[in-house]
Amino acid sequence: MTVRIGLGSGLGTAQTADEFWQWIECCEAGGIDSVWFSDQLLGRGLEPVTMLAAFAARTRRMRFGTSAIVAPFRDPVVLAKEFATIDFLGRGRFFPALGVGNASDAFWAATGTSPEGRGARSDEAIVLIRLLLEQDEVTFDGKFYQYRGPGVHPRPPRPIPLWIGGNTPAAFRRTARLGDGWLGSMVGPDAAREARKQIEAGLAETGRSIESDHYGMTLMMRIGAPDDPVVAQAKARMVARMPEETRTSASDMFVTGTPAQAAASLRRYVDAGISKFVLMPMAQGIDDLMDQTTRLVEEVILLVED
Image (tube, rainbow, N blue to C red; front, side, top):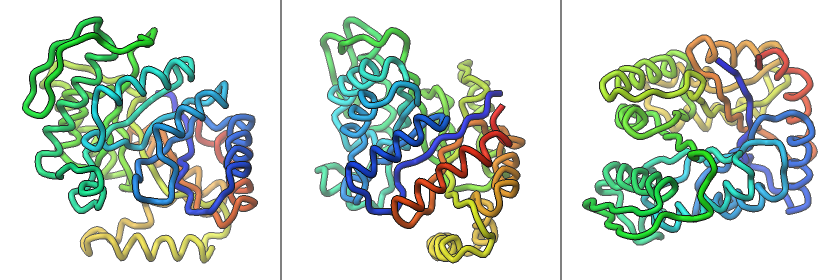
């Protein structure tokens, strides 16, 4: 099982375009495995599909992906064409994760879609995207999507791995049926271990397989003093959003403290079967973000990655 650490871009710190690319160049030169972009259509973050195309052209080494893109918000034919284009520009470094979104999101009305049936709609979109990326001629008749016509080009030289995002049993079943990997978010090591068990049980039923190191987790990160007020504030916001019965596990969802403590937190997930990480730095300004990235590279990664 190969352990690798990437970073997420949902950083909560205002950046100019020059500052953003300065950070990306720091990640590229420093040994960060990958950078991931979340899908916040109405948020302050960058739009992921557009950003990934720019990222693919700007970098040479790092892998990159979505964490996760909400499939029902987008036309699957257009999305498949975008995926093929991004993979071409990135020379095979593209790892998209797809999810179903939250029913309470305001994005549904903004995109003229409905959260009703979003799981089944996502399933059809994932199947159709894969067919379009891999076949010369495609025939697809679903409840939500129908298509007859050619596959998309440029044809990826190897199948683009489609990961599934989400923390629910439905997401685990979707991963077992349709995914090439799983990317969870903000759950503790015990829940991550259980998620992998459920996915593997589903794989046994479907007869499919997933690479043993294609199980990932998104977590918040800050290296420094254990009593850092930035961490305390983030934890308080997280606890306020969590159901009362799960609040005691809030600390498990943060990679914080000294480099040794941060590494130990990540190793707990590795022991639970998680080998790919998307860490979201809790930073205040570009200088702090650069410092957190450098500390991760120089003081933590060597303690965790193989």
